[in-house]
Image 1 (cartoon, rainbow, N blue to C red):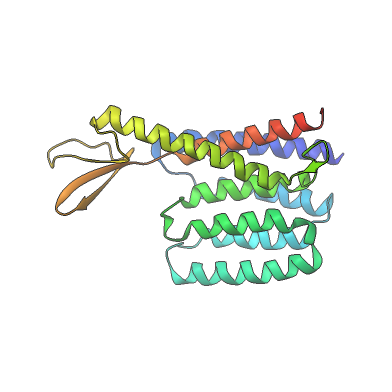
Image 2 (tube, rainbow, N blue to C red):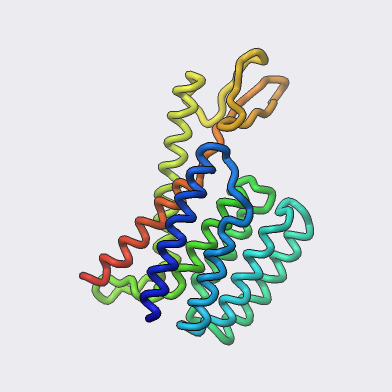
Length: 233
């Protein structure tokens, strides 16, 4: 029965990520409530079937923090308190979920100021890690056991490198400059949906807005396939 609900969760997450990727590609924005149904479904499964009560409670609190302005002191304080208190409780009561929790904490910290990731990207990442929590020790090759959150983390690193390479070439194709940022004239038309504009030493530059949700989705599918293939080895 739990496998049936788990596969249903993965289907819901897959559809949600595909929708998020489409809108991230088109508009570089994601509806702020899009991942709420995934979190509700994952919370039910993690608590009812697997007993991840403490991990679920603080994961939900961490997710709710993302609905505040991440560049403010309030978010930093809320994130810091949730991360520190949650870590303490998980160490003492749900130690088996410590690794996925720490991966969630790391990514939630990366959204401060939105310099590395946008809020929508981090919501997507947290939804994936939270949903994969029941797969905590199922990934194994021979005697090596690797938590699914770490596998996703590594796969996301690979797809992020692909995203940066794509950004480099896309900027070159549009501006003719092989760089992550390119100088453009004041009269040059800039697609503000795909490029951000900034000034440096009174010169106008553009940098490509990477639709990271697409690459997060890719990392999720690679992780899911890897988890299932590992059971056959």
